[in-house]
Image 1 (cartoon, rainbow, N blue to C red):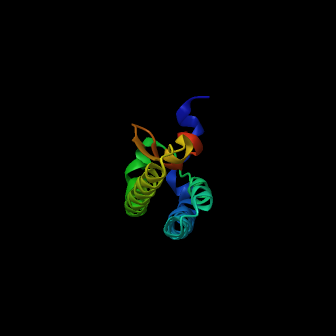
Image 2 (image 1 turned 90 degrees about the vertical axis):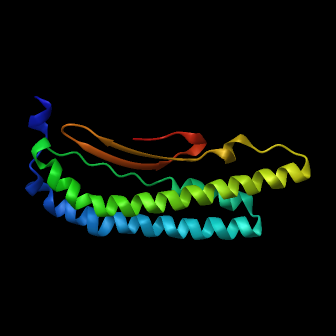
Image 3 (image 1 turned 30 degrees about the horizontal axis):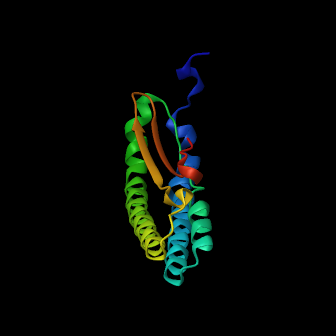
Length: 148
């Protein structure tokens, strides 16, 4: 069976796409914002174990979609606004993560100890466009791994 035969028309995916863009992505973004607030709180209070746990919990977001090439333009128009919001939230989260790592380095340097490598891992955002598909993946990996 060829790759094009495995794909479906966008009209058939419309209900799932609406749920995806109107409900699932905003829910994931709200969850990311809550993780961000918790990370900031734990960072201020210097509760490093809880902060690291929140970083791991924030890493459970993954978004991926694949459609036929002739529906790609319509799909992109449907997803682009949400994708921009997700990119902005991701950039904000990356900034927070960078600040927490810098704070952690400063604390350990002040105490004369070394920073644990597992706490310096960051997040990856990957956006891939190809002829017949579009992928948008947001993954925060434990120990720096990126999952697709």
